[in-house]
Structure formats: structure tokens, C-alpha cells
Amino acid sequence: MAGAIKISDGEGWSAASWVFDHVLRQSVPFIPAENERLLSEVKKGVIEDGLDYIDLSEVSHTDKRVFLRALEDGFRLTESQGDKSFADPEFYPGFIERFKELIDAVSSNVAQAEDGQRGADNGEI
Picture 1: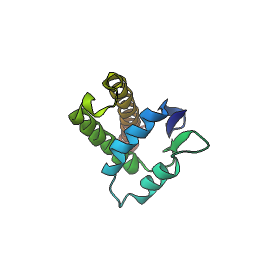
Picture 2 (picture 1 turned 180 degrees about the vertical axis):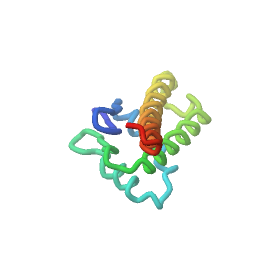
Picture 3 (picture 1 turned 60 degrees about the vertical axis):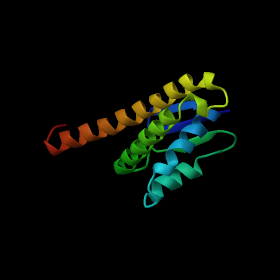
Picture 4 (picture 1 turned 90 degrees about the vertical axis):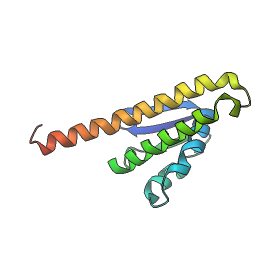
């Protein structure tokens, strides 16, 4: 089984279901309750015909930034708990690597959108 997050058209992240589930378990609590649309997208995408799938391609740039912050907070929480929080600590380094990959992918998408927005504000194409 696997889990996937579509960040935008042509951009995504996928991992084993246990990695996907643990990333969300660590991060979703950091999404503020007032971000109903984002929370709805995340919650409705979990377990869809045996594949965990979240589509963030239609959420606002602001919501993607909130998601990024939640991932970063979840990552810090995971690091603070260390490998002893895993039933098999041997899997911790790989999990951390996959978690970082997701953060980097979402961060890159957010930065690209902000760069494009700045270019549009400056009259650039």
C-alpha cells in the first residue's frame, strides 16, 4: 500500500502507507481549525480504495503555506521524539528522509508560486 499527495499538476510525493500515515499524524494537528478547506481536503483523501491520496492542487496558495508550516512543525515534533518513538528505530532515518522530501516539495511549490506572484506584481511575464 502507498500514500500520495498531489501538490500541483505534475508535482507530487508518494511513500509507503505507514510513512504517509505517520507524516499526517504528526502534522495535521498543527493545521488550525479555521482552515476548514485544507482540513477537508486532507481528511477526505485518506484511504481511498486502498490508496491514501490527498489532492492539494486546487487549494489556495495560503492553504499550501499553512500545510507547509504544519509539516515543518510535525517534523520538529518527530525529531524531538527521536528514533525511540518508533517500534523499530531502524526505520527512523528513512522516515525522516521521506518527511524532508515532502517538506522540500511543498516548500518549492510555495516558493515558485510566490516568485510567480512577485513577477506578476512587477509587470514581468
